[in-house]
Image 1 (cartoon, rainbow, N blue to C red):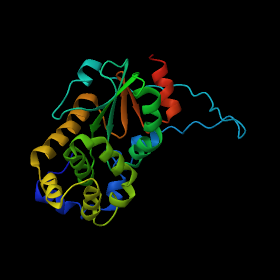
Image 2 (image 1 turned 30 degrees about the vertical axis):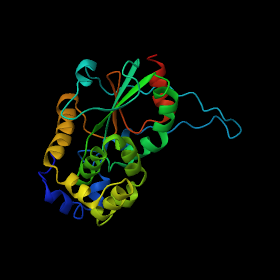
Image 3 (image 1 turned 180 degrees about the vertical axis):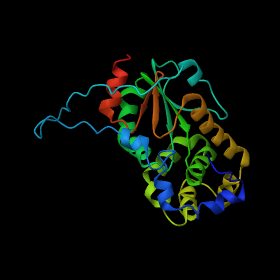
Image 4 (image 1 turned 45 degrees about the horizontal axis):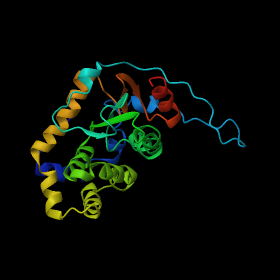
Length: 243
Protein backbone atom coordinates (compact mmCIF):
# COMPACT_ATOMS: atom_id res chain seq x y z
CA UNK A 1 0.00 0.00 0.00
CA UNK A 2 1.29 3.49 -0.79
CA UNK A 3 2.23 5.59 2.17
CA UNK A 4 0.18 8.68 2.84
CA UNK A 5 2.38 11.54 1.67
CA UNK A 6 0.81 14.89 1.06
CA UNK A 7 1.63 18.40 -0.01
CA UNK A 8 4.96 19.65 1.42
CA UNK A 9 5.83 16.15 2.60
CA UNK A 10 6.05 15.07 -1.04
CA UNK A 11 8.92 17.46 -1.75
CA UNK A 12 10.75 16.55 1.45
CA UNK A 13 10.36 12.84 0.74
CA UNK A 14 12.16 13.18 -2.60
CA UNK A 15 15.44 13.52 -0.74
CA UNK A 16 14.70 10.74 1.73
CA UNK A 17 13.88 7.64 -0.32
CA UNK A 18 16.77 5.18 -0.59
CA UNK A 19 18.04 4.23 -4.03
CA UNK A 20 17.53 0.54 -3.24
CA UNK A 21 13.85 1.12 -2.53
CA UNK A 22 13.43 3.07 -5.75
CA UNK A 23 15.13 0.51 -8.00
CA UNK A 24 12.99 -2.24 -6.51
CA UNK A 25 9.96 -0.31 -7.72
CA UNK A 26 8.88 -2.64 -10.53
CA UNK A 27 6.87 -4.83 -8.16
CA UNK A 28 4.84 -4.63 -4.97
CA UNK A 29 7.12 -7.30 -3.51
CA UNK A 30 10.74 -6.35 -4.03
CA UNK A 31 11.86 -9.92 -3.28
CA UNK A 32 9.92 -11.18 -6.30
CA UNK A 33 9.96 -8.48 -8.98
CA UNK A 34 7.44 -10.07 -11.33
CA UNK A 35 8.01 -7.72 -14.24
CA UNK A 36 11.73 -8.39 -14.06
CA UNK A 37 11.36 -12.16 -14.03
CA UNK A 38 8.73 -11.98 -16.75
CA UNK A 39 10.77 -9.75 -19.06
CA UNK A 40 11.41 -11.66 -22.31
CA UNK A 41 14.73 -11.38 -24.10
CA UNK A 42 14.90 -9.31 -27.25
CA UNK A 43 14.97 -11.18 -30.53
CA UNK A 44 18.45 -11.89 -31.91
CA UNK A 45 19.40 -11.98 -35.60
CA UNK A 46 19.64 -15.42 -37.15
CA UNK A 47 23.31 -14.81 -37.85
CA UNK A 48 25.85 -12.04 -37.74
CA UNK A 49 25.59 -11.78 -41.52
CA UNK A 50 21.81 -11.36 -41.56
CA UNK A 51 19.94 -8.13 -40.94
CA UNK A 52 16.58 -9.90 -40.67
CA UNK A 53 15.62 -10.79 -37.08
CA UNK A 54 14.52 -14.31 -36.30
CA UNK A 55 10.79 -14.87 -36.26
CA UNK A 56 9.42 -14.55 -32.75
CA UNK A 57 6.24 -16.22 -31.61
CA UNK A 58 3.73 -14.19 -29.64
CA UNK A 59 4.34 -14.67 -25.90
CA UNK A 60 1.46 -16.30 -24.00
CA UNK A 61 -0.98 -13.97 -22.28
CA UNK A 62 -0.75 -13.96 -18.49
CA UNK A 63 -4.36 -13.00 -17.88
CA UNK A 64 -7.13 -10.91 -19.35
CA UNK A 65 -9.52 -8.08 -18.57
CA UNK A 66 -12.89 -6.97 -19.90
CA UNK A 67 -12.00 -4.53 -22.68
CA UNK A 68 -15.06 -2.31 -22.14
CA UNK A 69 -14.19 -1.84 -18.48
CA UNK A 70 -10.49 -1.51 -19.19
CA UNK A 71 -10.87 1.45 -21.52
CA UNK A 72 -13.30 3.33 -19.29
CA UNK A 73 -11.62 6.57 -18.15
CA UNK A 74 -10.71 6.89 -14.49
CA UNK A 75 -9.88 9.77 -12.16
CA UNK A 76 -7.67 11.59 -14.69
CA UNK A 77 -7.98 12.30 -18.42
CA UNK A 78 -6.46 9.47 -20.43
CA UNK A 79 -3.05 10.06 -21.97
CA UNK A 80 -3.12 8.43 -25.39
CA UNK A 81 -1.18 8.02 -28.62
CA UNK A 82 -2.85 6.95 -31.84
CA UNK A 83 -6.31 6.95 -33.36
CA UNK A 84 -9.30 6.21 -31.17
CA UNK A 85 -10.72 3.78 -33.74
CA UNK A 86 -7.50 1.75 -34.10
CA UNK A 87 -8.21 -2.01 -34.25
CA UNK A 88 -5.75 -2.73 -31.42
CA UNK A 89 -5.73 -0.92 -28.09
CA UNK A 90 -2.78 -1.22 -25.72
CA UNK A 91 -3.18 -0.10 -22.12
CA UNK A 92 0.18 0.26 -20.40
CA UNK A 93 0.65 0.57 -16.63
CA UNK A 94 4.09 1.93 -15.74
CA UNK A 95 6.10 3.43 -12.91
CA UNK A 96 8.55 6.29 -13.54
CA UNK A 97 11.26 4.70 -11.37
CA UNK A 98 10.98 1.24 -12.95
CA UNK A 99 14.05 0.37 -15.07
CA UNK A 100 12.05 -2.12 -17.16
CA UNK A 101 9.53 0.60 -18.04
CA UNK A 102 12.39 2.85 -19.10
CA UNK A 103 13.77 0.03 -21.28
CA UNK A 104 10.43 -0.38 -23.04
CA UNK A 105 10.04 3.35 -23.64
CA UNK A 106 13.58 3.75 -24.94
CA UNK A 107 13.94 0.58 -27.03
CA UNK A 108 10.47 -0.60 -28.04
CA UNK A 109 8.09 2.36 -28.06
CA UNK A 110 9.81 4.34 -30.86
CA UNK A 111 9.47 1.39 -33.26
CA UNK A 112 5.99 0.60 -32.00
CA UNK A 113 4.97 4.18 -32.74
CA UNK A 114 6.43 4.16 -36.24
CA UNK A 115 5.16 0.71 -37.20
CA UNK A 116 1.72 0.64 -35.59
CA UNK A 117 0.63 3.84 -33.81
CA UNK A 118 1.41 6.33 -36.56
CA UNK A 119 -0.14 4.01 -39.17
CA UNK A 120 -3.48 3.86 -37.36
CA UNK A 121 -3.24 0.22 -36.28
CA UNK A 122 -2.66 0.76 -32.54
CA UNK A 123 -3.89 3.13 -29.89
CA UNK A 124 -1.77 3.35 -26.73
CA UNK A 125 -3.30 4.39 -23.40
CA UNK A 126 -0.60 5.17 -20.84
CA UNK A 127 -1.55 4.95 -17.15
CA UNK A 128 0.32 5.85 -13.99
CA UNK A 129 1.22 3.07 -11.55
CA UNK A 130 3.78 4.62 -9.15
CA UNK A 131 5.47 2.44 -6.55
CA UNK A 132 7.19 5.21 -4.56
CA UNK A 133 7.11 8.98 -3.92
CA UNK A 134 9.69 9.69 -6.59
CA UNK A 135 7.60 7.96 -9.23
CA UNK A 136 4.58 9.92 -8.00
CA UNK A 137 6.55 13.16 -8.34
CA UNK A 138 7.63 12.28 -11.87
CA UNK A 139 4.05 11.63 -12.93
CA UNK A 140 2.87 14.83 -11.25
CA UNK A 141 5.42 16.86 -13.20
CA UNK A 142 4.37 15.17 -16.44
CA UNK A 143 0.73 16.00 -15.76
CA UNK A 144 1.66 19.58 -14.95
CA UNK A 145 3.51 19.80 -18.27
CA UNK A 146 0.13 19.84 -20.04
CA UNK A 147 0.45 19.16 -23.78
CA UNK A 148 4.05 18.12 -23.19
CA UNK A 149 3.03 15.11 -21.07
CA UNK A 150 4.63 12.48 -23.30
CA UNK A 151 7.80 14.49 -24.00
CA UNK A 152 8.19 14.89 -20.22
CA UNK A 153 7.64 11.16 -19.67
CA UNK A 154 10.23 10.47 -22.36
CA UNK A 155 12.83 12.75 -20.77
CA UNK A 156 12.23 11.34 -17.28
CA UNK A 157 12.68 7.78 -18.54
CA UNK A 158 15.80 8.64 -20.55
CA UNK A 159 17.33 10.48 -17.58
CA UNK A 160 16.05 8.01 -14.96
CA UNK A 161 19.58 7.39 -13.70
CA UNK A 162 20.07 11.07 -12.89
CA UNK A 163 17.10 11.42 -10.53
CA UNK A 164 15.48 8.11 -9.52
CA UNK A 165 18.32 6.76 -7.38
CA UNK A 166 20.28 9.84 -6.34
CA UNK A 167 20.45 11.22 -2.82
CA UNK A 168 18.52 14.39 -3.60
CA UNK A 169 15.88 13.71 -6.24
CA UNK A 170 14.21 17.04 -5.63
CA UNK A 171 17.09 19.09 -7.05
CA UNK A 172 17.55 16.67 -9.93
CA UNK A 173 13.87 16.83 -10.86
CA UNK A 174 13.90 20.61 -10.53
CA UNK A 175 16.69 20.86 -13.10
CA UNK A 176 14.79 18.61 -15.52
CA UNK A 177 11.60 20.60 -14.95
CA UNK A 178 13.38 23.89 -15.61
CA UNK A 179 14.64 22.56 -18.94
CA UNK A 180 11.01 21.73 -19.73
CA UNK A 181 9.98 25.32 -19.05
CA UNK A 182 8.91 25.10 -15.40
CA UNK A 183 9.62 27.99 -13.07
CA UNK A 184 10.57 27.08 -9.52
CA UNK A 185 7.15 28.34 -8.41
CA UNK A 186 5.35 26.07 -10.90
CA UNK A 187 7.52 23.15 -9.79
CA UNK A 188 6.65 23.72 -6.13
CA UNK A 189 2.95 24.23 -6.88
CA UNK A 190 2.84 21.06 -8.95
CA UNK A 191 4.40 18.85 -6.27
CA UNK A 192 2.10 20.24 -3.59
CA UNK A 193 -1.10 19.70 -5.58
CA UNK A 194 -2.92 17.29 -3.27
CA UNK A 195 -5.77 16.61 -5.68
CA UNK A 196 -3.36 15.67 -8.45
CA UNK A 197 -1.48 13.35 -6.11
CA UNK A 198 -4.73 11.72 -4.98
CA UNK A 199 -5.89 11.29 -8.60
CA UNK A 200 -2.62 9.62 -9.64
CA UNK A 201 -2.91 7.27 -6.68
CA UNK A 202 -6.48 6.52 -7.70
CA UNK A 203 -5.27 5.44 -11.16
CA UNK A 204 -2.92 2.99 -9.50
CA UNK A 205 -5.55 1.75 -7.04
CA UNK A 206 -8.00 1.11 -9.86
CA UNK A 207 -5.38 -0.79 -11.86
CA UNK A 208 -4.58 -2.94 -8.86
CA UNK A 209 -8.12 -3.58 -7.66
CA UNK A 210 -9.99 -3.92 -10.96
CA UNK A 211 -7.36 -5.35 -13.29
CA UNK A 212 -4.99 -7.08 -10.84
CA UNK A 213 -1.92 -5.12 -11.92
CA UNK A 214 0.90 -5.89 -9.47
CA UNK A 215 4.07 -5.11 -11.43
CA UNK A 216 5.37 -2.77 -14.10
CA UNK A 217 5.33 -2.58 -16.97
CA UNK A 218 2.04 -4.40 -17.46
CA UNK A 219 0.31 -4.28 -20.84
CA UNK A 220 -3.24 -5.12 -21.84
CA UNK A 221 -3.37 -5.68 -25.61
CA UNK A 222 -7.03 -5.88 -26.64
CA UNK A 223 -7.66 -7.07 -23.09
CA UNK A 224 -4.92 -9.73 -22.99
CA UNK A 225 -2.38 -9.16 -20.21
CA UNK A 226 1.39 -9.26 -20.71
CA UNK A 227 4.04 -8.41 -18.11
CA UNK A 228 7.55 -7.18 -18.69
CA UNK A 229 9.39 -4.94 -21.14
CA UNK A 230 8.31 -6.61 -24.39
CA UNK A 231 10.68 -6.30 -27.33
CA UNK A 232 9.40 -4.92 -30.62
CA UNK A 233 9.48 -8.45 -32.09
CA UNK A 234 7.36 -9.85 -29.26
CA UNK A 235 4.79 -7.06 -29.17
CA UNK A 236 4.62 -7.10 -32.99
CA UNK A 237 3.80 -10.83 -32.89
CA UNK A 238 0.94 -10.15 -30.49
CA UNK A 239 -0.41 -7.19 -32.48
CA UNK A 240 -0.13 -8.92 -35.86
CA UNK A 241 -2.21 -11.84 -34.57
CA UNK A 242 -5.01 -9.37 -33.84
CA UNK A 243 -5.03 -7.49 -37.14
